[in-house]
Image 1 (spheres, rainbow over the protein chains, first blue to last red):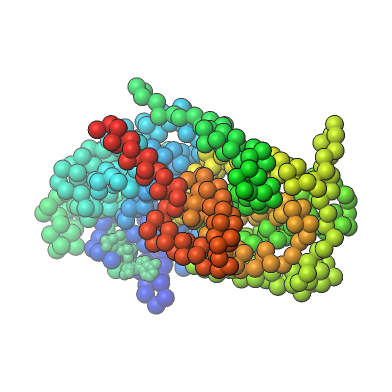
Image 2 (image 1 turned 180 degrees about the vertical axis):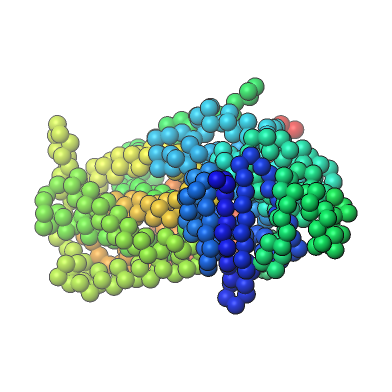
Length: 247
Length: 329
Ligand SMILES: Nc1ncnc2c1ncn2[C@@H]1O[C@H](COP(=O)(O)OP(=O)(O)OP(=O)(O)O)[C@@H](O)[C@H]1O
Ligand SMILES: [Mg+2]
């Protein structure tokens, strides 16, 4: 059984069909890549998979359970976390508070007013560990809103990791990063890959081809190609768009 | 792990002690500086009200502009309980809390999926409905005149009974309630619940994706805030020996918003406290100079919003930060 499956998803906004017929399968322990041109519907696809939008038709399955149309918090509670293409942090919290509120135990105790969330050293230690993973050690007490762009991207991933997910969705994590930042992120994701099942949307083909076990190409709301990086290098669309050369 | 970032939240803090000492002794020094005991009662009641209100506005970022409704429901609940059910200050105050909570809980069912301007408009609409009902439902509320026969009663303290007839005695009772409210809310805002409220203010969508039940948290904080408003309203009914529609009106609801903002509820737990004190001092001070004191207070409000939206608490924090920077350099 696949870890995660999207079956014949269809999503439209008004008259505009964004996802025509999308079927995807993500295996446990793998890094699956999604690519495709701007406006192809990649983020919309993530939004459907993680519960932000309900599909107009089709099914989403996680570990054999039908999760179609469940709200994001329920899907998150099952062990699916995501980062966002546009940064989506708690800007007036410090870096470590961003992680702390995202820890499963904080969420589980969200109605326990007797619990001291900042005073619990096992939780703050765990949060510090997460920050170490994404390279933000030393920045714990900075306000998230004051971080430079690259560190905000790292924190974006950190918040997703904080929930100790079994499946991690990352929407264009390299966007806006320079060569240095991208290289550092590549290293980080290479590391995360060892412990997490990951799905990444990415424009940077060199980045994706280096990391992914399988890649799906989405265009016109459909999956037009699927395979290992090697198989895709020979794909017609990939060659036509010259992205294969870069990889 | 070399450094620990854990920082325990104390149950009692220095500002708390300062507030408790300064305000708690009000009947001892108030009259000697030209103030009067009843002013202390009013200030304490509105601090309770504003602290509860700030859970919504400052912490969760939810603008409730019809909050007077729950304050009013608390006052009516107190009066109706005392007049029709049982003669007990404790139970009648509890009725005020329950009344505020029930009505707020009901309203919250209809608004908790909203935010921003729609949220604000719907709170105004529900506030107006409550005000209208209190005006028109003569047989229960006494219409425009309100409930007239409410009396202060005596407080059962197990070992003894204390009459609340005297304003100073009523003050100490209200102050004791305030102490309890401050201690509980301080704990609450430093719990995971308090962090979740703030997370929802900053980024409701991400809070959901992290796993929080955003709707339920928004519902519960509105209900809690309504319960605290009902508590304050119950005390107000004791103080006024009456319950009447005016406290539910739109402009009365506006007062608690202005207090909270002027004081700096967005940046400090203590904002609403400062704001409530400033409001009443301004009312008495400006009111002794001019009949149109509200005009000047309104201008002051606008000035704060324009020049220092973080309010008095924000200005104070800037001042402290600047001084600390100077000391360090
Ligand atoms: N909430 C929405 N309402 C209406 N249209 C939407 C909505 N969300 C996305 N769309 C439309 O769906 C299409 C696909 O957008 P989407 O963000 O999924 O593309 P993408 O593949 O992620 O593109 P990019 O590479 O630029 O991030 C776009 O035309 C967009 O305008
Ligand atoms: Mg996108």
